[in-house]
Image 1: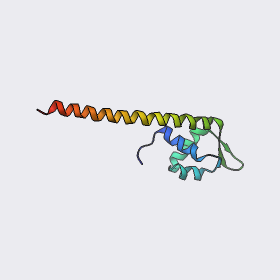
Image 2: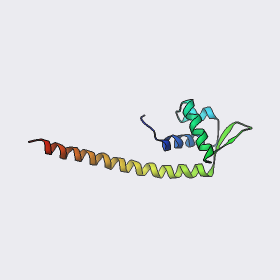
Image 3: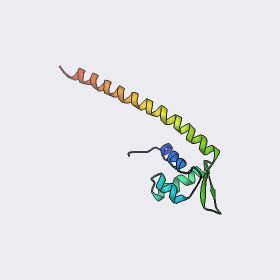
Image 4: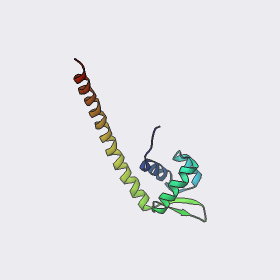
Length: 103
């Protein structure tokens, strides 16, 4: 799968917490170790992206969490577009470098 950024991990977690979700379900759904789960759950709870219902022991996605997912989707779409063009640019740069070296 490769490296995931902080935003990728948070978006994966929030995507799992579509309704009322327990900690274990988030861990497996977002493909996280228990240590990372604890770290990111604390962060997304503190920032108000999810709330924890102590009585039933599950997490609920907030409106702020839904807004994050919408903004992340747009960000991800743009990032993919930029990455594609950067890769194309790098290939062209390598071709120019090769032309400069060859005699």
